Image 1 (tube, rainbow, N blue to C red):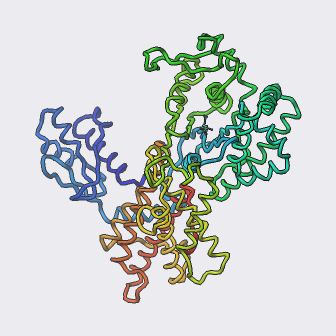
Image 2 (cartoon, helix red, strand yellow):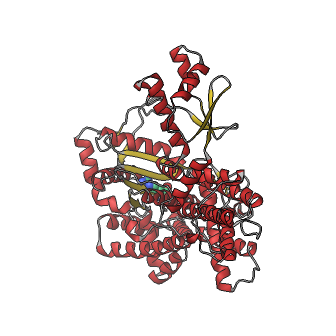
Image 3 (cartoon, rainbow, N blue to C red):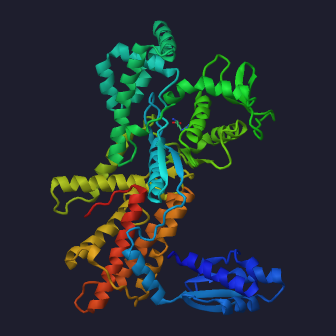
Length: 575
Ligand code: ARG
């Protein structure tokens, strides 16, 4: 382990056990970054209270018991332990990380099976901006867990079933399969849906046909199923275009839409009823999980089967959670879904517990995604009021990126490749860099800025390092050091990079990719200072300093690139 904060924690714990007895071996030494040194340990104050001794005396005792310690310690103030790491320790650890293909990132043992439910657009409607964020955050979590050695099972819980499909299939027949497929592939799902809806509301005969179609669909009639497949295949082809443009790792193998659970719903209900977990209430089959009450203080039902015999969103989610635990053998299930569905998921998890389908060994978590807002602070819409087509939004980002990087003498193909990486990187990074549950303002100018905590700034930082290596005429992989720290800017950068491995673990554990963004932003800022203070290629720089600085550049670039890759943000070679 290279993360200084973890190394120091272990060493101080050993000292605590040594000075005050083994029962203190697990105490948290409260290691924090410090203004006056690299770190400070604050444990002496709280421990002194419990031991009824003077805090400074306790701090001195801890200091005296430290052994094999990679730094110097001073007791200050009421009993802080100020810790300054030895340069030689930072140097050798940095050297180790540089030589490690995983850059200090460990593997989780034993590895876990992590089911990640994300993206999940609704076929009958447009894939809108809200789904953009669940897609991007979910994909980053999938990449993080896979990198840590977990088995990731992606589940794209498409809204691909339900009563609107009667109306949609009839409309498909009306306009002809070919036209329908063309429209759906072009992402005109909203228009398609609205046209069907208008007929449904205004045309009795159509409405009748749509109703009959719902029944034939539910009974599995082969011709109706064929038409449903025509509709869904075209829709999924559109989703795939979006995924491809974004560089999202979802494939057709990850499709696990609501329709997949259809054959399981009856048994789901029967089993819940037989075990007593669900009861009939006003004709509907309901689970009343403990602790949920409505505004009238009455127990709140999770409706598993409606009084007309129909199934809904909750029925499917009950079947899905059982399938994920029982068949997919999940240790952990992440639902990356809008925060407005928080109550739904709390009730599904609680109901699954009541049913005995969610053992304590499995954790089901709703990774809440905050709403996407326009610059006006309201729910993101186009000027005319309807929600904007995702593909148009992505294209706009690419167009703006093209303008931003214009004219560096690149040929057309290179330029459009860079523009795509910068545009998609900007959109994705903006989604990832704020905590997933906070609301998020879609602002192209800000996300495409080349300064601040943005995708383009991180990409630019890597491109800048690449250009140093081009000028030096060596490959980054040949920059092996040794790393020797002279200037404070070098030291600060190297020390920071040592924390990468444990940070990646924490970001995955806590489902917080934004912490990885913050880490990379800090990396880029420290890199900038390093550039200002520490020339690399100038002739007056002695060869060993040059070699050390090139190695530090290589390490920084490797960390930035690995981090961006875990976020799913593309890295162009040049900018
Ligand atoms: N299709 C749903 C929506 O757009 C999201 C599905 C999330 N996953 C789930 N298991 N319910 O709101």
